[in-house]
Length: 111
Length: 355
Image (tube, chains in turn purple, red):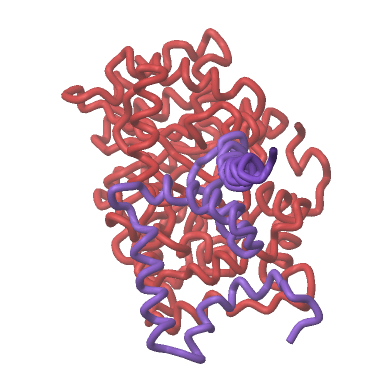
């Protein structure tokens, strides 16, 4: 094992996870491949969604992969940053919306 | 920006380039040899199929100095083909009917003062003519403004570089103001009928990545180009050719300076596609340099790797020897076999060859 929890080169070994559980690994990668094909959404649109989600889940491997993929598929730097802001807004909003719960609890117990 | 040659850059030397491409910059990078990949695909030694495309590079002179240019072309390059060499090319075309397509490239081929004469002579031989036009040349000087009409007069297929449908990516690769001038030039080509249904005047655009990555799907990209160019600028065209940047000359310089060389080479190797290898353009093309020497492709030409058979110059053209020769390959060839493959006609393993 490397000295660091995250190693850039591990991204290229992603498919090796199937070595320990081939059946589930193969099913996952088949599904994964199918998800990113052109369908109701284009592969290009999916790359931008994946980039935003990568930031929401804060996965450095995903950010590496989908920064490249989204740029290669023609999204501009500004568009990619807007996608990151969408992730940020949802994450921030998810915290903030719980403020309603806090307010109601406080109102419940306050004189 | 000056050419590598004008800078006396080490990469202006073909042997130095080959050394880097074949052996890398560090001992850490060990890549499988391209010829071994070909062997595994049952294609080594690589042999021609039928040579039908006669590609002529009539000079390295260009009005642009693009960052990715494999020719290292630019305004400071003075090497251009003479009329004498063009006459030798015409003699070969007369004697070899199987050379159905003549593909004229450069630099900016229009800057060669013999360009129009050469095209008119080829047209008399009833061949399909392609001119690789960088678009901005049409606006560069008044004497080039009538090029769209000239192309139309000779029913030339125009292949124009437009690395992207947005200004930022295009200008980053090809220089400030190139996108705007390219759009104007495309509108002028459309005005005379190029790219329009029913005219028979073919206008194809060439995409190549503005960075260290491979082209995305050619078909998907073509749809995006068509939608954006028509909506924003009223421009129409026929096909988009997605071309991979090969790691030579100025693009190699970019890869090395930006620290992307090793990862790019790994990307090319990992994306090796045997179907693309089977369809590489060097199997049906012969490339003629500005000085008349013959090469397997325009990339081997820039690496000064002359054909490996007798008759290395156009004046001693030997169709029989060329048909039997072994095509010279190297690590740079991974650029033509990665993913959907790449050729002067675009992807070669996505929807089949363009021609």
